[in-house]
Image (cartoon, rainbow, N blue to C red):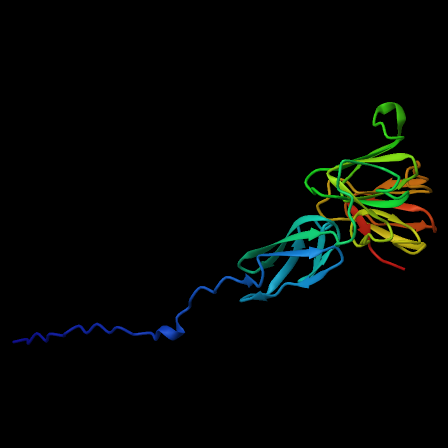
Length: 255
């Protein structure tokens, strides 16, 4: 007679200590979600909980960023983004002009209120272009127009005695008081804002159009200009007293 042997099944449950279970890494954070800087200021953003793979600025002409160090270039707002392996974190940067005398009203007659001389105009709304015009006398109309133009970041003008400066979406500062940063796009006077010599000009990432122009006077026709292709780089030579205009591009080196 065969005896049937019964076996009891034992269910073994392995308990894994919770402290060695894999958990989702915490998202990286920035020490600031928004900052306000003056033109020329610098501020270093600090990332916690992750390693940054790439820093970027939505408007590098307003503020640039390198290894977390933000440099305020022109009046406006931009978003600084730090990309990590598992997230993108941002900081809104607002750039304001320095606290020297500003001429904000629509128009100024060059006499006592607005001294004749050279002025730097700064855009107050970086989402649209600013406009200026210079007229002979106090009356503002097309028949006495001396100069008019639109610009994105800054412009340079000369206002003589007996002329009127008209502005929309911008304000003016005497050139001796204005801080003009040359690490982004804009208009610069050679000998005042940059030294004479040779420079390399490079397009700004994401710019719709990239071009430069060199002129003898602030309102004269360019003596040299070129539109740059994507990722192109070209060398230019500028002399004292000339004006360099950069749109969607920047100086890649300084002498």
